[in-house]
Image (tube, rainbow, N blue to C red):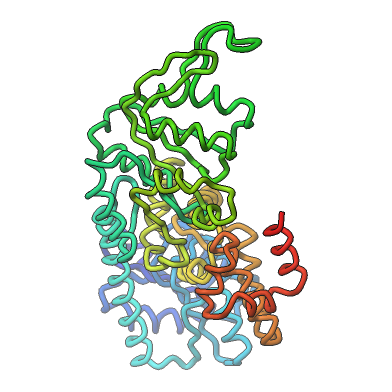
Length: 467
C-alpha cells in the first residue's frame, strides 16, 4: 500500500481529502506530488481492496481509480464507491481510452474519465474546478437550510410566487374568516392550510376538529356531525356530542366536502346559516361559535352545474376560496421541499442523512408527481429509511420512480403519437382527472384530448357524466 501521507498525517476535518487507487506506484507518486500542494490531503493505495477500506474509513471528497487493476478493476470499484457514498466524486484513469467505457463510467456515477499519460496542467485545472464546486455545494447546503427556515410558513415550505400569494391571503383572512373553501388536487396540503388558518385565528387556542365527509356512512353522518340524545335510536344509551359541538370555540375542518350526500348538504347549510345544531332525537337547538374550513379535490362549480352539490351551500362555503396548485405547477419549490423532508426524516429516524445525489435530484425533478407533496413526503421518508449513508441515491428511491426513469429512456423509441398520449395521461393524473383543466394546460381542446386518450377513455368519461 502506498500513501505515506495516510500513515503520517492525522486527517484534518477542514481539509479536503483525495484517495488515489492505482497498481502503478509511479502514478501514485505523480498524483501525490501534483495534488499535494493544492491544499488537500492525498491518500494512496496500490491494492484496490485496501484502497476501498481507506475510502470507506475516510469518506474523501474525491477519488481517482485506475480502470485496469488485478482482483478488482476500476469499474467494479466505482460501483462499490457509488453504493457506499454517491456524494464522492470519482475519476477513472486508464491508458486505453474507449468511448464505450467512458459512457459506462459516467452512467455508473463517475465524475470524469482521464487518460494516461496524465496532463499535469489538465489534472490541476480539473481538480481545482471540482474543489471550487464542492465549496459552492457546501455553501449552497447551508444556504438551503437557511432558505427552508426563511420560507417556512405555519408548517408549509414554499417560495414560488403562487404559494407566497396564498400565504399572503391566509395572513389577511385568518383574523376574520368564518368559512373558507380550500381546493386543489389530493396531496397538495389542504389540511395544512386549514390548521394554519386555525392557528392564526383568534380561536387558535381552541379545538381543531377534523371531519372526513367521505369516511362516514350517510346513515350515521348526521349523528356523528350533530350528536344525539339518549334514546334517540337503538343503542343510544347516553347523550353524545357531535363533531360540530366538539369544535365549539374553535375550527372544524370538513375534508372532502364534495363527497357529502345532498340530504346532508341541506342540514349543513342550516348550521352555517343559523350557527346552531340540533342533536338527533332532540327538539332543542344549541348555539355554536365555530369557524369552518372545507376542502375538496373536486370542481364544485361543475358539481353544482351537474346538480350534485347545492349552489346555496357552495356560495356559503366559498366566501373565501383558496385553490392550491399541484406540485407540478410549483416545481421551483421542489428543492426546498426535498431538503425540508430530508431534515424531517433524518431527525425522526435518528440517521445522518444530509442530502440527495445529483442523479437522484435529476430524476425527482423530472418525475410528474401525480400524488403531489404527499407523494414526495412518502418518497423521501422511504429513501431515508433505505439509505445507510449520508446521501440518498437513485437506488434508494421507490421502484415506481426508477421505472419512470426507464420509461423516459425507452420513450425515445416511441412514436410521436404514443409520446403525446402518455404526456396527456400524466397531465390528466396531475390535475386529478379533470379533463377540462388538462386540456387547458396542454393548450388543446377537450375533443382533441379525447382523441389523444383514445375512444375507450372518452367513452368512460361520457358514461360517468350521464350517470
